[in-house]
Image (cartoon, rainbow, N blue to C red; front, side):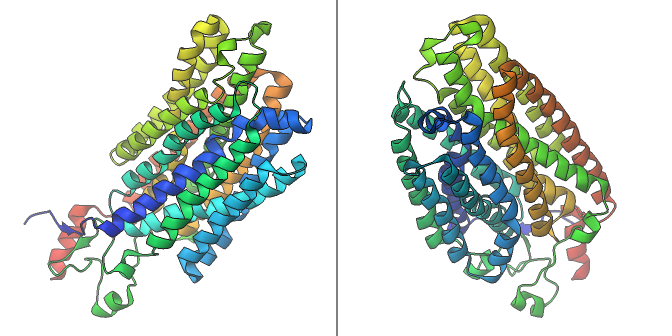
Length: 460
C-alpha cells in the first residue's frame, strides 16, 4: 500500500490571498513598526519633549493591539471580512496621516491607540486567521513569506525615510504623509478584491488538504458534513491548553520576544546619536544622512530570516530558534562595539550586525503563529493564538517605551547589555515550549500523514 495521499493543489485564489497579506505587511505593518524611530528625534525637538515621550505613541499602538484581538476575532466571525479589514485599514491610515498635523504630542498617543486597534486586525486576525484556513500544509512557509514583507518594507521605507528627512531631519511631516498614502494603497484595494474567509467559499479547499479521488477532503466523514463545511481539526481545546505548563511559557516567551523586537525602534535614534554626538563625544559625521540605514539592514536580515524561519521550522523548530538566538546576540554585540571601538571604520560592521539581529526579529512573526499551531493544533487555534497576541502586545507596549527610557537615563552601554540578556532568556523560554509541546502532542492529538492515509484506507 502506498503511503502517499492526494492533496489540494494551488489555485490563483490561494495566490491572491497570499499577495494580499504580503502587501498589507509590506506597507501598514512595516511602516508603523520598522520605520517608527526615524522621526523620534525630530518630533521630540519640534514639540520640545524627550524622545521617550515620542516613543510612547508606539506603546499606545501596542496597547491598542493588546485590546483589539478579541473584538477583532468576534467581528471576523460575525461579519463580512472585507468590511472588517477595510475598516481596520482605515483605523491605521487616517490617524497616521494626522501625525503630520497634530498640534501636540498628546495627539500622537491617542492616534497610536487607534492605529493599534487596526493593526491587530490586519497583522494577526487577517494574516493568521485567513492563512490558517487557506493552507493546510506549508502554512509555516506562507506565513514566513508574508511576514518577510515587513523586512522588505523596512528596507524600502527606511531608505525613503532618511532621504525625505535629510541630514537636518526637517522632512518629518512630509514623511508621515508619504507613508500614510502608501499604507492606504497597499491595503484597501486588495482586501476588497481578494479576501474570503475560507477557500470553500470560492469552490476550492485549503492548499495541501488530503483529498479522495473525487476531490473531497479525507477528514470529511459524511455528505452532511461536507455540505455544511463543518470539519473539526485535531488539537487541544482552549480549556485543555490552560492546564499545560508549556502554554504559559509560550505566552511568556512570545511577550519577551516582542520586547526584543521593540529594540529596533531605537536603532535610528542610536545612529542619530552616533552622527550628532558619538561615543566619548566623537561624532561619526558620515552617519548624519544615514539614520535609516541600520534599520534597513535589520529589515533585510528580517526579510531573509522570515523565509529561513518558515523553511527551517517546518523541518526543525528548535533549529529556527537557535538561528534566532545566535543572530540576536551576535548582531547586538556588533552594533554595540563596532562603532565604539572602530569609529567610522565600524559603520559597515555595525550595519551587518543589524542584519544578523534581523534573523532574531524574524522569529517574532514567522515563528510564533507556527509554534502555536504545531504545539496546540488547529482545534482552538484562533482562540489560543489570540491569547498569545494579547500577551505579545502587552509586553511590547512596555518594551517600546522602556528601551527609550533605559537608553535616555542609563546610556547606550546599559541598553545593549540588557538587550542581550533579554534575548538569551527569551529563547530559553521558547525552546522549552517547543520541546515540551512536541512531546505532549505525540501522546494526545497529533497524527502523521502515514496514520491519516492508513485510516483513510481502513474506512473504505
